[in-house]
Length: 224
Image 1 (cartoon, rainbow, N blue to C red):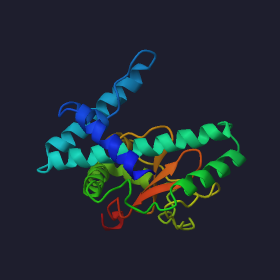
Image 2 (spheres, rainbow, N blue to C red; image 1 turned 45 degrees about the horizontal axis):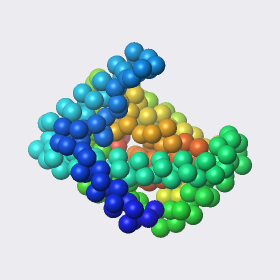
Image 3 (cartoon, helix red, strand yellow; image 1 turned 60 degrees about the vertical axis):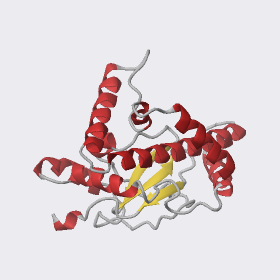
């Protein structure tokens, strides 16, 4: 990405976002015209969970800032995805997936782990995930976390992931427990969360490209 343009976008964003509006960057927008009531309800739940997580933190302002940076990086990636997909005609096919992956990889040739999951936001992600996987009430969430998760299922072949690597189409895909998904910052349609072992990765929903990864994002459930 163009770092000068990125810096300019961030500067403009911070001038426009007041303290109360900042949280809008880290929770889903409440349902507008045409959206289903259940979507509005889920968005409201996510907003409450995120607000509670930040309100109980002794470093709330720092975490809000880290989340703003995370969402800005995510927005920049979504913009790159949209531009490259538009050049390809946006037709769904294996050829489009492969071409999009090559185009994005070329544009992010210098991308490294932590470019989006910055060090400042990593502790918050780990805490939010751990809170949803601990305790007797989280049994279903822990089962869902293991289901289809490469490296955790006994018969699954472990998958080595790295930034700009394509997630194999025939590889197992983990289920992100709904309670965890509801707590984490929302993503645009071009991205989704996925677990590989205990690592949390961001995957491009069309290119199937690993965009970033957060090592040891989930707690070690074998000790629970």
